[in-house]
Image (cartoon, rainbow, N blue to C red; front, side, top):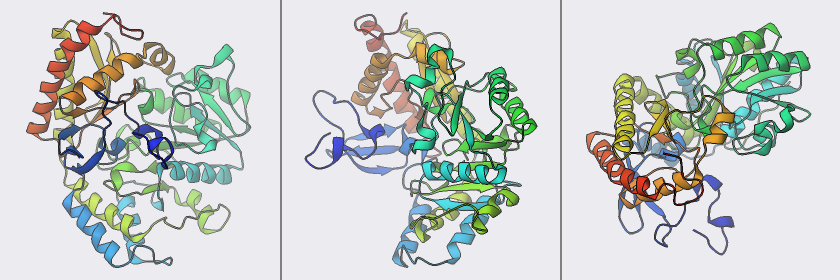
Length: 423
């Protein structure tokens, strides 16, 4: 949707959706697993604030806590008790990473974590995954999914003065990078390459990556802005048996209220308190976001994660069955509460395979067919489906019905346009 004043019709490019039968989508309200457009039509939502609402949209307990903080004043400038309360609530879930700083966005959190690593090691270079998304700030936006450099053109290692790209799921490439550079402060990695279509880590890869970094005196930063508190009430890194030096958190920790955090070891985070690393931000740690964090942590502590993941895994299987019955093989990649769909018999195991398997026309067609049937999914070929604790039997049944109806339509259309998957 475009307008006279808002650039491109949206403030974040990911919000832009294709027209459906000449009409744009504009969301008027969200609650639980649903969105409603301006005409009052209800949709089952699988974008969920791009993963920011694991409890479902607008959970009442969190909204009430945030509203109370707002009524007391949203921006006192000086210290307030909610800030330490929220930090303690996060630290109760992060083990040895018990020093916390709050910011407003995941991009800021990654920026601060990289700054802390550079100060702690005295080294300037960050190694990040080609095809990974770690925020939109200049320092780490380089090499994201779809960027030319992510494909390692000419087989040369792309980079800048302060950043080098790594091939995800390739431990030998990490060994080569450290042989090439002795100035690496940290390796920055997600638990899976979520924004490249939920590419899963190969068995043992992340553990070996951590070992390689430590052997060379570099830190491990786990970017969990998307995956934190998704598989259990805590960092996914710990769930996977890793021991990172710093983690970035966001999305799920605030239930839709803008907040993100960096959690790290005391000896690393001390640099901020001592002024050796700059931290600032007018809205960082404001009372409203801190109240949302505290209320969210309380709800997640009582949440049934195994049941959520089981429901999601069952849904993945039923989606694959819908397409198989229609004669079009589709597979899923990811976890029960965040996963991607790939046309074909096998999900890609690395970014290069994902790049080759991408079918933008198919992905947009799937979005439009599901949207027509009251289910919203991301239109991008690298998009993801999220489930929340609010996705109950009714919402899941509506999703299954929509996929069952859409699959034959997409099967009939295959081969009719460039980018349609083989079948």
